[in-house]
Image 1: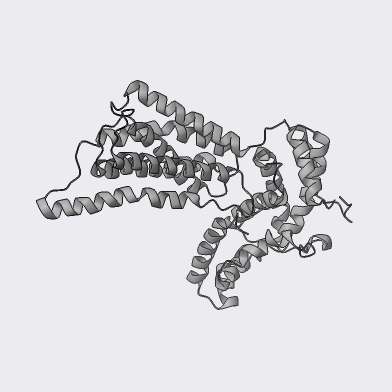
Image 2: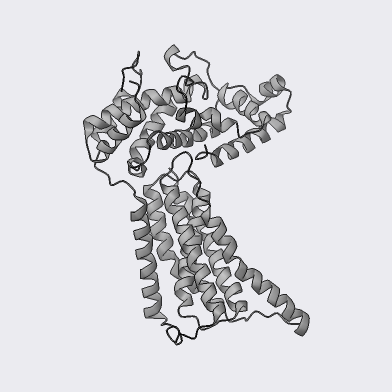
Length: 174
Length: 220
């Protein structure tokens, strides 16, 4: 289910009053939205975990959404926070292909572009983006990433550390 | 709303569980956060006035301008830091509370003034111009600040702050400013040496405590 801003905002406002049907519809729509939001910015094998973690956070932090304000910028912050948290965890990804329908988020222009994960990467130096993409998203080891992009292994580690720190500081920036 | 071509394959069980667990929640309105902080601040002032008393000249109409200015700057810092904390609890892309920085810079005039006057005093007399009897203000200010800091921490725990570290600093800063504002209604010292050093140190100490204590309590 693909939801628009106004519908989601209305559903979440109803959910805050305890309307379970509205909440179920909103969460299903959020789930779909999140899968497209995270696509290509998380290792495919991590996508389901990240979406579920984000849904749990939405549930726990439901009160922090103010129905007088737009919904998607709030949802994006929750998603970004969980995404940075996931990137911080060390893992080596098993590569699996994504289902076609979730591969792109670029079909929604305007506000969505402003709150996208790509927008966050534009605030980072290219070397930090590359290090994060290779190790944290593509799942390469530090040595493999160093061989791929020409940075030393220690520089890869430093760039990941600094990049994630910057990303964490930019969660609410547009 | 339109139907997508494919339903997400995961998490339907999770969604069912979350829906079953749903309870009505009160949205975290900005005004409610300010009311909570205001109530905590009033309680702080009340406790300070009851236990320590008030300055004898507080309502005389002849207050020292330095004292009045420091009181105003402290209050401004307390409000700005509290507003920032409350905004941080209700995140959204594009949220960038920065007013507290300007208020902190303005309040920093007091300790900077202390440094300048102390340096001049030292050059003329060979001794520091800061009195050594401000320890009471230092720790009492921190202690009084805990009430408002605790209220803000509870508010943050309900919310979703995306930068727990910054939220910790600001919670301590807000609590410390409110604490030292309440204490200043009692403290009989008017000179910038005392206010800038001991009261300033109390606010900085509160902010540091906030940085150390609050982040683990509000991570989500």
